[in-house]
Length: 138
Length: 177
Image (tube, rainbow over all chains, first blue to last red; front, side):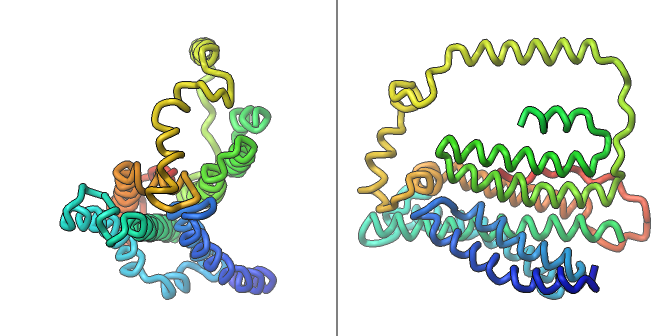
C-alpha cells in the first residue's frame, strides 16, 4: 500500500490532529466527555493508521517494541503507585485527597495522574496487540 | 440495529460480518448519545467500532475469511434462544420506567455522587469523578485487565520469526471496554 499517493498524503495530514485530539480527550476528560480509555484508543489508532498506510516495519521504527511495552507497563505502574502514594501519605489506597494540601486539588491531581496511567496502558496495549497481529501474516 | 444483527447472523463472509459488527457498534454509540450517556458512547465508538474492527481484520488475515458451514440443526437452538429472549423480556416488565427519578438506581448512591462531586473533586464531569475517584479501585482492576490481555497476546502469539510456519489461530482478545 506504500504507493497510494492519496492515502499517504491524507494520512500524513490526519495523524497529527488525531494525536492532538487524543491528548485533548486525555486532559479534558475531567471537564467534558472522554478520559484515559478513549484517549488511549485514539492515540493508538494514529499509530495503527500509520502502520496500515506505511507498512508495519516503518511503524515499528516509530514505535519500537520496547517503547510500547514500556508504555503498557508504566501506565499500570503509575496508577498503582498513585494508590500506594495515598497510603504512604496517610490515607487509604487510591485516596487522592491526601496528595496535596487541599483535598480538592489532591483529588484533581490524583484523577489527572491515574487517567494518564489509564491512557498509557490502553494505548500501549492496543499498539502492542495490533503489531503482534499484523506481524503474524508475513 | 435489528436489521444489522439479522444480517450478521445470516452472512457467511466474515469480512462483511466484521464490517457489520463495526456498524452495529456505531449504531449502539448513537443510541447511547440519544440516552445522554456521552462518555459511554465515546468509548463504544472508539473501541467497539474502531479498534475492535481493526483487530478483527487482523485476525481474519491470520485465519480465513469464510465461515464453515454449520450443522443444520436449528430447532433446539431456536427454542433456547426464544425461551431466553422471553425470560429477558419478562424481566424488563418489572423495570422502572426510563428516567423515573424514584427508580432504585437513582436513590442508592447516585444522589451522593451528584451532590458531593463538586465539593469533593471540583470536577464538572461526574462520570470521570465516579470512574477515577469514587470507583478508582474498579478502574485499577480494569486497567490491570487490559494489561493482562496485552501480555497474554504477547505470550501466546508474540514471539515473532518462529522457525515453524504454522501457528495456532489467533485468539480473539476482546478489546477492553
